[in-house]
Image (cartoon, rainbow over all chains, first blue to last red; front, side, top):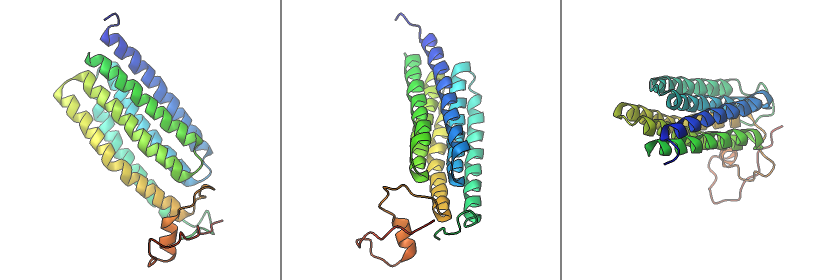
Length: 102
Length: 125
């Protein structure tokens, strides 16, 4: 092999980190623009999943596997946050759209 | 050799995450955007976690990565279901070409047979 495996892994992890940051930035556009509150909640959910992916990719990049523990804890907290936000959406329904169907 | 497999998994996973974000920006409707966010995002994150498991090559790391993947696969449908239901009950604007609205139909008349005519979409301002 001409290309070393570790070199390829470093380059791929660098590219993956850059792509994940670009993805999070694109999701932020939807978070800012989203016309309704549900769009923003969906964008936040995607951003939290992207942060978990970023932690895993950074664990590959740095060779430090303890970032996976951070990913586990963050995935748990993000799920709880998403559930709480959707409960909040259900609780406060009708205030934004008076003609909304039950 | 395992480093090359991990590099390929990293690239595939990050490309899926990018597809999820682009779909988040481009798709027309909240529910359709949730389709991109949950499915492509979960697949991309799963690929990157598998890349970490392959790159480390030890049992503990593989088990932790598998735990995160299983946790994502368990929680993503639940979270998507909750968000979609809350958004629908709040009264989102559906896409113009959406012509099946089974939830609104069953909310309007709960006893209707599923083989009946597709009911009209409930009007929401």
